[in-house]
Length: 319
Image 1 (tube, rainbow, N blue to C red):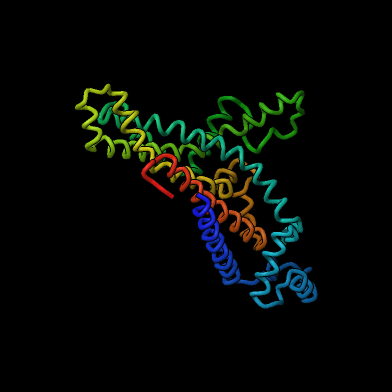
Image 2 (cartoon, one colour):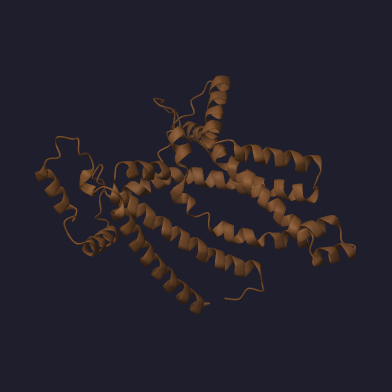
């Protein structure tokens, strides 16, 4: 176990190093220069540009910029070019905003998808399977922004309540419970919208995986032995059908960073996805590079967690 952990840690550190180099080079190979943030602004005189480049080390060779940036990032000295705020506290604030959306959306996606997919596979060709398949294709086909506007119009016109933002603007809270309920209400709609496409895709994947396992020899042997349908479906078929989802579960961690730009923009939710999009538009390179670096860390962490979970679920796997 220790040898595996050490070897995996070294491999992922090497991978992270090359990812940081590639992302840094891609940012600097993009058209335009960092000093061209707002060329139409009369305040950006040549003297200001020169001072800007010197302050952020843009006048140094690229390899020195790389070392200065990541050393400053690890020490917490890197600031945003847009508002001069430290990058890590700024990202942490947006991360906390995106975390409830991610948790609720993930719970809804996984708790709804599996019952739908399993029941559709067990009763293949029945009315439930046909209706759930039709609903899944409809949810996959409808654009997210269009579905979001439909939900907003439906909720606002029928319930006459605000749904934009993380809380009701100008509302004075009478108690902690009132504050919690208001935030939960604003959380429900974007979470449901974010989970809808995930439920549609994951439920189809669960159904197909169950159908593939149900046709294997050991399942037919279990039926021939006279086991009950519940034992066949949930003890023999489902346990083996779940193995690919262990890998998927570890790879949902990058969703903490990415979020959904469309959902956060429509609902005015100050999350990670919206911040990254605004940073790209503003050429805020420190924020872009930091978000990309954290995303790479989460991806590598997710793959490591998947390896460990896969070993625990499948006894045939050895480290």
